[in-house]
Image 1 (cartoon, rainbow, N blue to C red):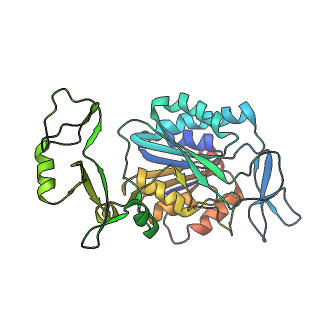
Image 2: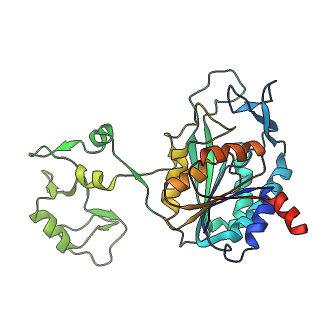
Length: 343
């Protein structure tokens, strides 16, 4: 497949893609960052990109004037054909904010199914603000993550443990200087026919985490630490966890907005790369139907994925083309395409 940058109204563009039967159920990942129903106009100027309320020298980029039910219906009308493009292994990540996000989630539950809701990811977008307002300062936005099914692509995301993490989580040190912690040999849940280990049974309401044979091997290898009262606990060494890395949670603090954005509300490319690595493979197609300056497209290309971007703003298309310099792709202008087909 050829990478595509489509200029046109995104509902028309999504239906245009659906007209190609090869693309139906072929896209593994959608990341998209629609307007947040702010009621503002956004512009680009030479001084900075994320201008709200155009200055004298600013060039209009896009309008975010739809609000309330009108905005929710606008978005739903686009998510329905977008879902038809997703494969059975597909996922969608929709970037929104704390004001409109809860209403979008209710709508997305209907489109994708409540059972396919996976996460409401909190993204720390900026440093704390100190201006006065009726309400707490807002430093976060949200990413709603849904899948098409339980068979979605999932490449387990992880990050390295910091020195502080290791010292906090693995407080004990053995005779060889190796950091470790311990966990109980038993877990919640009653066992019907408990088997003794070293003459002991699991406490009431608990069961052994593994077989007695495995615990015997652990003990032979010195992997069980015994208390003065004869209670055993399994040793977990830091290096075992360092190799796997730390599991990513649903609050993301490392992906603040770019300080020198080239387009309004431009997002951090490393944030999008995390999503692409996790929910797509190298043979996947990634779609962004509010592609703005093309950050999603650049991230997908950097990671060896094919991509499709859609936007109706002249300024967005120009910014995307600049960001995508040196990359092979086809540009489709839906207005020009219709004119040529009418001839």
